[in-house]
Image 1 (tube, rainbow, N blue to C red):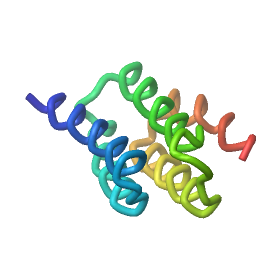
Image 2: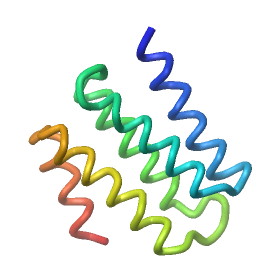
Image 3: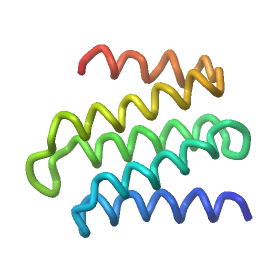
Image 4: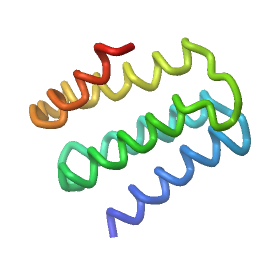
Length: 100
């Protein structure tokens, strides 16, 4: 049941970002999604979803993306992973942060 909420937030984030062009609302949805990674969702599924959304947001599929928006998404991810103390995800995604 809880994974439905996770999946709904995943789709909501993508819809708000790409189709509706509301990046701040997409970030709110994404932040709510990140709360699920603390206990409800498996590490592998969480990592796949997080990477997918970050690729989706940063991929410019909807046109150019403001750097400040990207920074907010990456900062939200970094904060959530640190808060959850999920070392495996944190170490894997920190490599991505070094690129940016």
